[in-house]
Length: 359
Ligand code: PAZ
Image (cartoon, rainbow, N blue to C red; front, side):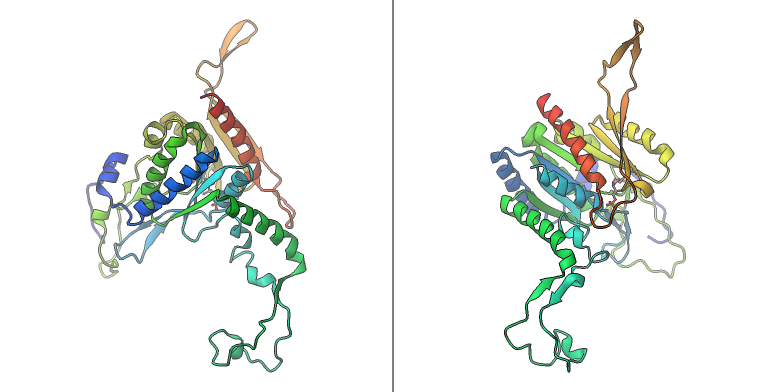
């Protein structure tokens, strides 16, 4: 890898899947998705595939270093909850260890759950720090084990999260599938999309994952950890194939497809979103800029081809794309913040209904 040059290759989706390795768990993951979709079909539910979190690009076969894409998984995990609330079944295709529906409220970094648990008994005053640890040599605590309760301040919130979580589990409307690398993501996206095609228009795709645009083909990966002895490291990556293209035109042409576009320069957000619609011909692109993504997004969608209107007797052609801005106050109360995903999902559900009825 170090100091090497190579002829960069252009991968079509087809040549990508012909040359890049299928993940070992793909067959089992696909079977799980297949059964889940069958159950949802019997219950006459719409199904949404929510992709969430960032993909990695390993630099070595025995991977020590990798390139990562920014995303905590907040958008995907939060959106999944609003879809579930609306009665959708959700396939949650997420980056391993990124945020998940329900448990996201107790993220280990921002709101660790151990902080609001209390032991309902006085700890022995003589206890040393060492004896407080589970792997201490002291004998285990005498029975009965003390009760553990949730602090009063957290109880109401935990109750409502837990109630929703249990209700979803009882209904069986959430199915989890995880990926780490961009290769796993692409194989899973194709497999899940094909499985979802039996749902026709009742299938929605909500592609919020942050997917690498570049990758290193398996054939060019160094087997062992790249050594620093040779000086600078230059890596030339190939482009990840534009996967929306086969998704829209082959894997499920009936599906209602929503993709996301993240930019750091707000000026190019709308042109880039329009370009994506132009290229792939799907239904909605949600544009968000990195710094305002939690408070402002724009939904870009195509306007019907014959959309001309009469103005003072003359026919005036409409713009090709419509913009629909969703914005919430950036200062939200910490105890009950409004989440922008609630409004995004509400708008998408209306559009998906129109899409289903238009079949
Ligand atoms: O997961 P998160 O809430 O931290 O970030 C969400 C997001 C910005 C990754 C998502 O809204 C998004 O724009 N996904 C697509 C990214 C892309 O253009 O590849």
